[in-house]
Length: 309
Image (cartoon, rainbow, N blue to C red):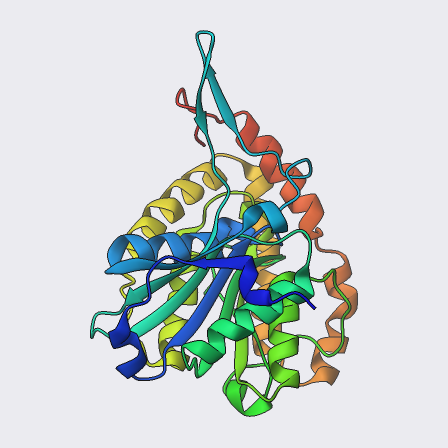
């Protein structure tokens, strides 16, 4: 069996890291579902706002299928000028108190998932990681006018006792992040994740409110002091623009109000019997796909000169 450490190159190995408290490993990989670009926004925000240094670089040639996800290249007046170099890296980020956070971010591997998981496990072992956290966004039939919720999962029930369980049993397409959590749990290691529930009709746009919600939950379970103000400010601007566009369409306003009623009914429901009683009424509400189609059609006609909504 090939040494999993051959999948990455050590860029920097700060000796003080081994003397710090056990770091947290946060992973937000692109490639699987990430509604509102929530996980990607978290990674970008932390690297931009906190002191960071590159620790490891994974061998993307061994992990990425370029024909499935062709990197962008720029051709300018007869010359290739730019290449959007794929990357999958681990950065050391220091929170506002100087505590260490390892951030695994970049493209999700297309191949060699098991070997990749073993490689990440060596990182967990070498840097004495105490807790691993994964974050991303999932599209849900919820309105943007109500508080965001998260779906929490973990290798031990005790890690998510404070979180409601929205699903009993469901089968979904796998991801490298989910496999990582599964394998760490099978080894008795603490790992968990948060999927923020993003309004389905905003899933394809950057939704900083969702990233801010993820940062708050990361802070809560990790004890790290992470900035969130800039994401909240950006989120307020996005909310204002979405409200404006919704108000300009009676049809979209109606379906958003319908989703608000559905959301409020679920919040008020305290047990399964109540939720089952709501079933027939909910069937009359528009589906998330129907709402998304209507909203996207509306936005298609509302593009500004710069191409943005």
